[in-house]
Length: 361
Image 1 (cartoon, rainbow, N blue to C red):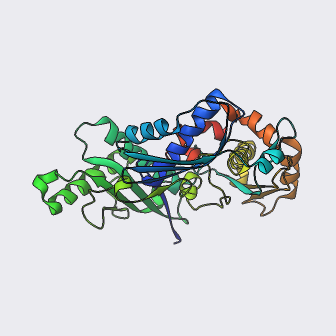
Image 2 (image 1 turned 90 degrees about the vertical axis):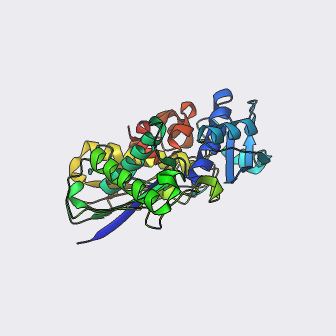
Image 3 (image 1 turned 180 degrees about the vertical axis):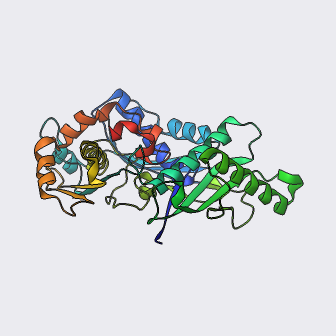
């Protein structure tokens, strides 16, 4: 038995709040000016928001109003918004340029992964963690009397030697913020109520039979009534593993949110994921595919292309085929995935490949 744990957080988690603010600003810039260059970071704590980064755009965008609006949409109130925003460095701008020979906006390596575990080509344990978080979010948003406040984490432990389905699941751990006024304010009764509520929800929605081998753990530290930015500081890009593969596969060194498509740590990662999905669809016997792309700042073509599969650890032939078959320049990736016309905030609240089917192909 090889036990492996993976995790996802809800869109109400402070780090995910920050991601959504950054991507909402990006969306607004690209909507008016597709040539916008954006690298915006967000920090949230309590009722304060800090915006910092570089934006060069012809769009007329009220960054503060957007940040306050996202905060409000998620049930939080921002009293103060501080902006530390400059234009893009002229040296970077010169290297990035535009057109067919548009250079990469940064150096780095990007990883794309796909496996045959689930229809979304994500590992089953990570898919389940995302599915449970989606259920929690749905209950919070759709049921007026739901005791949950939104901020939540889900950790799933599976046996990698078992089939990639519910038979592999050993533990499901959920920590969920809840109202303080449950059960007449009795903390012990309140947490037991939430535990039972979430257990029933998971068992019902996930089709889990009453099987003793699956242990469901809810709020193991007891009552959790203070969540979101009031409890923890949130920062853009601090959940890159939750954004991608939940620990099952490598991720690149760069975050996604708040970055326009010229930044290959976002667009290159999306393309690597699309290629991995394409290869697996073309040949399911591969089992799993891991694609790595690497770039140099200001250079259009990747400096390396690598493909690994379960069947063959390093597949030179597939790597050469990928390099020859796909336009892997930033402009080619942007066109192939239509990256100037996407709504990035919609996928910023969780795994980008769970929410963004257009990336998977």
